[in-house]
Image (cartoon, rainbow, N blue to C red):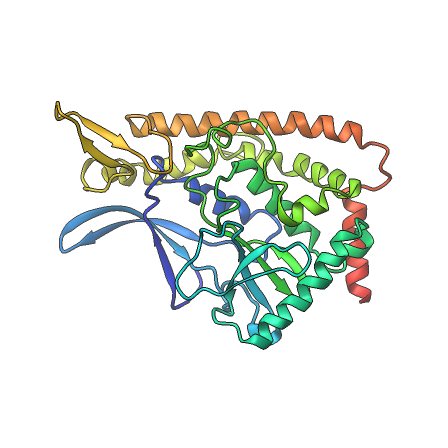
Length: 344
């Protein structure tokens, strides 16, 4: 990992497998993002007391070894936070000028009034272009590669936090880009949401994705992209042409630490409640009650990923059959975008 001053220690408090964030962070490095957080599992001790397994992770920020952009160049990093209930400290919030999407500034952390005005102007051009439903127009202002890949990550994991935060975008050279990815401990079936715990359904066509999906060309190239990257999602849980699956690869190296996290530390993923008969009960505020053993929780995750991938592949096949008259392919549209940007 590159040299930097700021780091994040994730305890993954609501994930009984501990690995959901790591799986998706590593997956995103194989896709079309400028930056994806590198991370590693470590054991944390404090005054000779074992505190548990943690994930040391690169912070999402503008920095030469992370997101290689700069606010001095008029670049922005921001988080989509649709829920008005979500506010954090001194964070500055605004709404985009046309689609009125609520966002929180991350870079710059404390934008000046001039920077907020500049952000609004850039978002106005972006949203106006998207509203045309003409890919030759919005390709000038939307990086299709990262926007499509980010959509599929959010769609695949069935993210219950999609409307509450941790969904990041950047503006660089006046172009909207998806990512970096962040915060998936409550995704991949690990949620109290009856809808989002299922392996079925499409739920991530929100915000700018909702508008982009109104264009049949965008629909087609997005579904074609899933056919390309489906093996990466499958390889999270199953051996395939890409090699050994990612779950087993993590377990081979870190399983002892994962087990010790539950057996030797006082850390727990839910609050414990003592009932009248002194039996230990669990009260999980955000996620469903986990299985009693680590291995059972891993098996649930493996099954969920496998079923989700099978469902999406089937639906994508059906969608593409209905769009076969569209005269553009993913490769053609991306080539057109590259030509537009090269000539701009």
